[in-house]
Image (tube, rainbow, N blue to C red):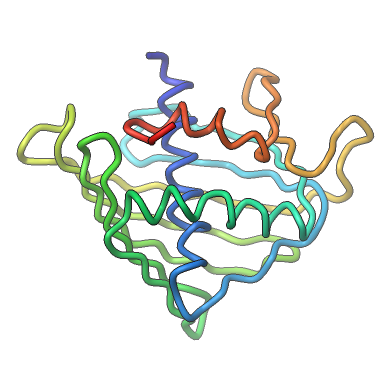
Length: 182
């Protein structure tokens, strides 16, 4: 498995934990401003390279993303809690993906019109991490770039290296998440 595929799977898991939990809580995250968003993912420790991608979105796509991811999160996560804070939102989740138990805490700051940041700390136990587990930290910095490009449609994600996929094709993302049911 290549680092890019692993990083993509981790990014999908992060999106899943941040967005899918919207169905199972009292607090709703705002919908992002329509247009082209740049998402830069940085993991602490330099274990994986920094990864930057672009996501073309609109209100309908963000809502669809939440609705499609929700069943996977309900199957995989025993806890999904999002609360509004003075500076943004806080999310706590406990999920199991392919025998790896993940306890995550995310702090979301900024606005969903121009830029926001998601700082996640997690403890992963099981799978290749072994019985002691592993603590990780990841930051996603998102910024609105403007209108989507002429050849893009809502849901398109352009990955590093130019690989393009559409978030509405959720089956492609499920294949990247270890243990996700097909």
